[in-house]
Length: 464
Image (cartoon, rainbow, N blue to C red; front, side, top):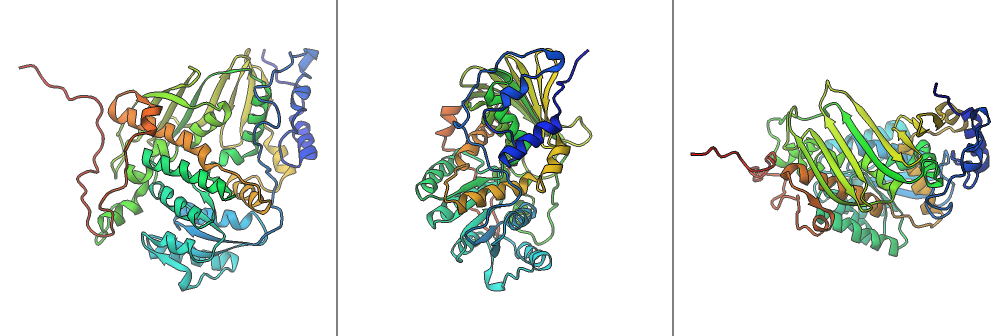
């Protein structure tokens, strides 16, 4: 019979909250607590993978510390941009939004109406910017920080311009869709750090207490050395937009952006990057190569796949299996599993997190009820803004753009392997000239002949 650790998880979490006020266990005490096991059995001392203090732990307080007043500009006023705007406003006192920009006027006006109705913030017409160059006008309008939530292909150039102008950036994930964008992000992140700018990305699992505490325990050595992992984002079909009369080529594609690979990078990049990021964060490993496959079964619009399966070989030789799917009516699973020499870990965005020993006994799990009792804010979408504002106000540089660039490029490798059927090598991919940005991008007529679904391998040629 499997026995769960007899430690009260509620007491465990409350103790950590009292000590650190962060919602995570204070460094140094975790291993000692976990040695008190059921029926008096003493576990062997854990050997840390990294010593406390040698890796970053975010300060996940409910509300950002008071300090410098901050004016934000929103670049991309669709669903995620609108959501991020309110996450920012809910994260601190002394913050406001003074400028909005989007390719389309109706989106700018929609967010402006929500801000006035819900927050009493009036964005004048003179601070509402429309068009493909609206990002420049937002950044030049006198804001202190920018929230970049445009379709992913635009994010590298928006980040680059914001950094040139000395603005702190919040970048939604993913931060790029191709190697050219990857190199732009990495170079710009270095420039941002040199200017003492704070850059946070929309990797909300890095701002979720169950994941942060799991990372600390893993670093403490609770399951030993990592030997392999599997990560999943298998879910249903996402939204799409049918083309309407009067819409130009670019207008349709941008409004339907999650279905076009030049805009989203395909869903392995746009969505599954979250799960890949958990593994690279927990393991501190980069991929060496990727071999994958995928297909298009149910997608209605666009030119991308709706399923991928990729085997990544990491730099120390272990393997990561990556699976993602956007097809309704199938088995869903959005989570991550990591195997170690002494046990395993599993977690998901629903705040579930479990460590087991090699016999399958649960030795630790996150207590959501205790988190709810001890904290007012449990939404990681808001906590990432709390963390961002705290870094800005304390003048402590943070660079998450470089961190997310690694799993972002990992996802690009998996996509290209599936598209071509070939093994894709990290060193070759990061040097590739591949650039998904259309050369004739405009809001009028474009050459649509290049937007085709990829087919891997070579065609069958019957013998004569």
